[in-house]
Amino acid sequence: MLFELEDVTYSRAGKVVLDGVSIRLPVGASCVAGPSGSGKSTLLRLLNRLADPDAGRVVYEGIDVREREPLALRREVALVPQLPALIEGSVHDNIAYGPRLAGHSFDARASLELAGLDPDFEDRDSAKLSVGEQQRVMLARALALQPRVLLLDEPTSALDQKARDAVEATLKRLHARTAIASVLVTHDMDQARRLAEYVVRLDGGEVVSAGPVAEVLTA
Image (cartoon, rainbow, N blue to C red):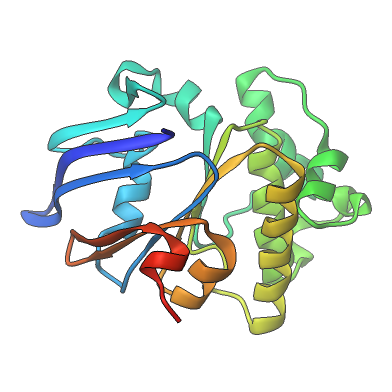
């Protein structure tokens, strides 16, 4: 099992965001789906210690995440945020950012290719990219860390349909070509059907249902 949450509760500003959540996320392509405010992005942040629960445990490959050094965990379980947040400079500068901080070697061109962009994008000014291209550079930046897991927080919510379809096609190719697992957060049940094998549905900070996509999200 990739992740297990055991009776997890989390509050923010006195409001309960997750209430006694117990779920299991298998290796492969998983999804946490639900409406805005259901707690799904908060749950995602618990998986690599961008937040810690008030109560309960978050377990990654059999080990409580609180036993893992946070920065090392975040390199192994890499988050791609909802909105692109590129640094000034070239695409290469952005891809190099994380590996250089970690003191790791990296292959920018290979990361771009895995993220669905031509390797020639490496020398482009990040400020002159479309939003869809920026999102794929964010994916390439995460891939440059050579993660074992990608956490994808509404990765297409800011995109038009054409760009969304391109990013989804990239994610499908990535799953077909690599052993990288993923946990996708989305409010779009159709996207969950397209991209995930296993889904957890949240609403109001509680689990509504969980299981294989074909069982949980019937047509």
